[in-house]
Amino acid sequence: MSSDRLPHEKGFHVSWDQLHRDARALAWRMEGTSWRAVVAVTRGGLVPAMIVARELDIRTIDTISIRSYKGVGTQAGQGKLEVLKRPDPELMGDGEGILVVDDLVDSGRTLELIREMYPKAHLATVYAKPKGKPMVASYVTEVSQDTWIFFPWDMALQYVQPFRGED
Image (tube, rainbow, N blue to C red):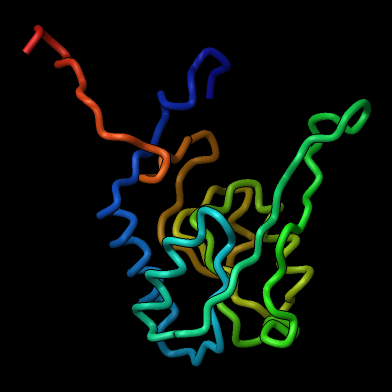
C-alpha cells in the first residue's frame, strides 16, 4: 500500500449478511468434530463465534480478551500484548476440543499468544491476512496484507453523493 493511500482506499467492506454467510461457512468447515466449547476472541470474534456456535449446536461459550498497547520511551510502538480476561481454566485445559474464533487474523500476534496458552485449541478466523495465516488452522477468506477490512459494527449507513451529478 502506498504511503499516500488512506486505509479506506483499499477497503474490503463486509456487510452483516456477508459476515453471517462467511461465519456459517466457517462453521461448515468445523463440522465433524465434537467441540467441547467455543471461545470468542473479544471483541471482533463475538459475532462470528455466536454464529458458529449456533450452527454447530454448541452451548458452552466463553471469551478471551487480549489488548495490544504501546509502551513509552524505547518500548513505544512495539505493542505489548496484555490478557485482560481469560476463559475458565477448567474448561480450557490445554485447549483440546476447544474452538477459538476471531473475526480476522492480521499479524498473528494475538493468536500466537493464544496458541502458547492453549496449544491444542483449534484457532479459526473468518478472514485471514498472509502474515497471520500460519497461526490459524481454519479460515474462510484471505485478503491481502494491505487491505483494510471494514466490519459492519464499525460502519453506519449514510447517504452517498452520486459519482456524477447531484441526484
